[in-house]
Length: 143
Length: 387
Image (cartoon, helix red, strand yellow):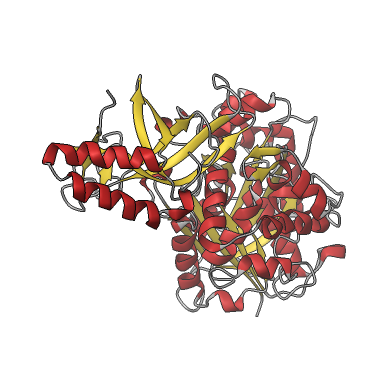
């Protein structure tokens, strides 16, 4: 089972979230509070390194992902085929390294179903995911 | 102890002037780093007709790692035969050169000294490329380094975001490299003195998608120096400013412009009492070609979203409305780290004095920009030819 929240920290003054947790807010210096953020978000940008630094396989896919709530984090990925800026991705923590995987339409529908299932709002969830699928039309068809 | 500072100028402010400028050729050099620094320093001191500066500021980013030398201020003042001139070393990653100029500027403006030699250099080409990348990459946030984030990787992320957000095109930022190689072909101090075609740039091998090899600056050796003085000369430092941003890229909300450049530019313009409209020529930090486009907009020299097109139209070419990096920029003049910012000041000093040979442009005000790390610690310096 993939964890659906990631440990984060929140600035008590500006409310910004940081992943992985940091001791102090980089802008305000306030001691940050523990928080959790959903493990899903959007690709801010990504690149593929063809001569990665020592200790990494080539090609190395790196993405900067903005999670729901605004925290951004660096991830590795198995591939970037079909990934675009704005693509929905899920982030998984494997041995303290974040990995992103591209969420196709079916994944997003399943996720909404699963989340909503607990709250007994399956119908709303299905319609929401359909609407989101249309709204995020630019990422469709690349599963 | 005799005070070395004189009275402030008439308006109550001690102005800072460029009394001398000199640099080595950038590129693959066989000399040691202290020898390269000495070559640049002696040229600048001779240009200023000064034998013994009141103080020395040395810019060096990673001498410990690249050459194994430490205690660098003392190593250099002794090597120069100036061990009685107090020396210190300054570092702000890849912008260490301009940080050193700032330190010297502050020493003159505060009335502590009348003449200061500012010299910076780096020696890297004897070290294998992966090791050089790793050493320079230490200026990146440690957590992000664990993901293999190198300077080209972060620049690749930024470039893709700029293409998506602002419609920057491959052709536009490739033209930066073409223009800067064309300029360097007229600069005997440049690392590369061969022009390249747009096709060659766009077909070069992929480094960090969408950045290709010819969008990235080379690894260079070299040194550059200026002598700052409280005595008037033909070129004055009109303004200088520093701007910073988080070392972690993931803490920033915008990838496609650099707060550190914007803040530095505002501070420099405020000190100078004029804005970007007075700037006739600029030396920008094109460690990666798209950074020149971003920097043109961050400094206010070209309105946001228009610098790519302006570059394609030739507005930033040597014969354009606003020549940018007549030296050839980091891409083609080369990027020996701490030498770079000072080398940019040397180039614009020559330009403002009318001593730039076949790459001479018509200019009274010049702007220098230097990016430290991945835009974590940036500097803007404004030079003005005598009134």
